[in-house]
Length: 148
Image 1 (cartoon, helix red, strand yellow):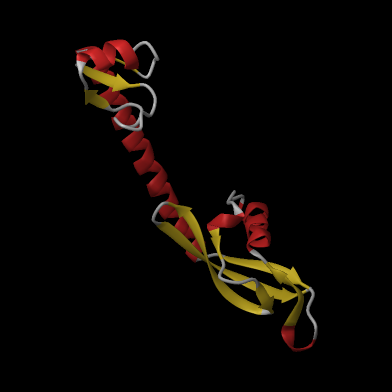
Image 2: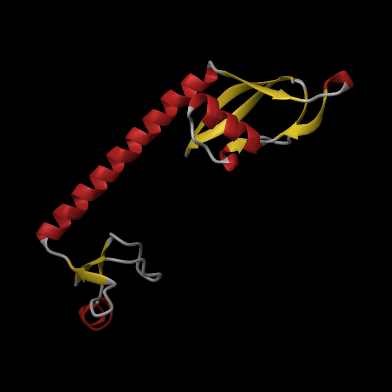
């Protein structure tokens, strides 16, 4: 019997997939527990339509992320920090501060985990910082740390 899974079932698959199972397993276990429902042509067409919509939405998000990455490549983000002699900062510029500056200056909401910074910036100067915008899309932005 062919059924569509309504929830993730470890031994069968993820929600939304169509699987073939024994009729007794479907009628006695999956359907009563609302883990699956029988598939007909109408349901198959609906599943296919949803998958196409998800694919289109994902492609649109990916394209928007690529455009944003190109825009970031030409942008310089300036941060002010207190520094002592020799350009050493009294603190450090962290991924959290860079994410906050992106939100404040460019209206770009990113999580601090999306800012790929190997170690905090501890000296004045200009740095290239990578920002993960989407799966497989990384934008590079110049961050200038200047004396306050």
